[in-house]
Amino acid sequence: MSIVRSQAVLNTQPSGMRPLDIQDEVMAIRPSESVLVTALMAKNRVAVDSYVFKINEQNIDPGQVTVVGIAGNVLTLDTGETDYCRPGQTLRVDHDTAPLITAVDRNANTVTVDDSTGVSEDDVAVLGSAGSEELSDRPTPISRVPTQIENYVETLRDAYGQSRHAQNERFYGGPVGVRNRDIAIWEHKRFIDRGLFYNVKKETTLNGQKLYKTNGLFASISTNVHEFSSGHVTWDAIQTNLRSDVRFCQSPNLWFFVSLRGWAIIEKIVRDKTVPQSYAEAAGIQVKKIGLMGKTLNMMVIDHFESGTDLEKCMVLVDPKMMEIVTTKDQTSGQRQWMMENVLKREQHTNGTDGTIGEVLSDFGLRLHNEKAHAIWWNAADATSGS
Image 1 (tube, rainbow, N blue to C red):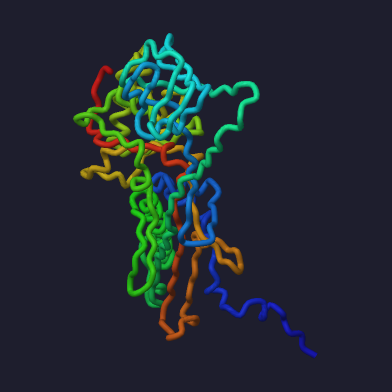
Image 2 (image 1 turned 30 degrees about the vertical axis):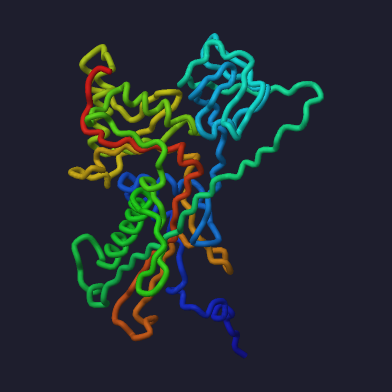
């Protein structure tokens, strides 16, 4: 009597063809040269159910209005701004002027106030709360439909291989198969990192088949984009940028991506602002993060903001709480399509190729929960001492 081993029927697919999850291995490869993808891999990756995914960006009322005309106690506001106003609401113009809105005419784009004394054209007024009188009617319902932003999940495939003959030759640095695999995995991680920065959303066809490209950081950020005047980076310019750029940031610790040139510029500005007590203290100053506007900017050098290109003059500020990598998943097995490796050995090739082929595959996309929580500063050419 013989015993039949059941392992043979567990999976009819050859073991070398089954995808291996190598994300932990990939995460440890050259983190300083693939900063963004390494940092985001430390967070949870979200699986979506389609290569086209949407992001709900909930808008909030601006909280301020601009007066463009005055006729007695009737104020004409900038186009569309009466949508934010309600009777019983306070308009705060300055420390001493705060009229009360008594009526709103959205068709005429005007509000009536109890007293317009002290209000001038071009004044920007901040909205206070709207009070309700006794036995007041229900307020007009406001339907706040979020803005939907669409992005795509992109597929990246990298392959490596070598012949059996190459495997039998001795090469400097170890077996050629190991070296080829290491380089392929590194290149895979490196190009995901570049894609998360540089790619532009596109749906097209290649070889008659559908191709999706994801929208990276540079293409996704549109609100907070600032140029340094004449290329001069100053302390005041950084503070001015931050005043507008950190309003929607949720995290107290922001990621500040710079080139080596950008790092040198920030370091010079900080050193010029620092008064060391001794030579040893001056020589030991290390600028890795700066604290401004209640936020900590953790500086990270991006290897591919390369010297000689305009990218070395770019600085990118992001809120890590407001961004994540998305991927897809097999709808049957649930396996995430992220950092998967397949290896085909010689005996597994259908045509009997005398060699080994490996492939690394990832589906990846970038999701920004609020693009206003991130910023791009460009034309950072040099540091200017003083303010």
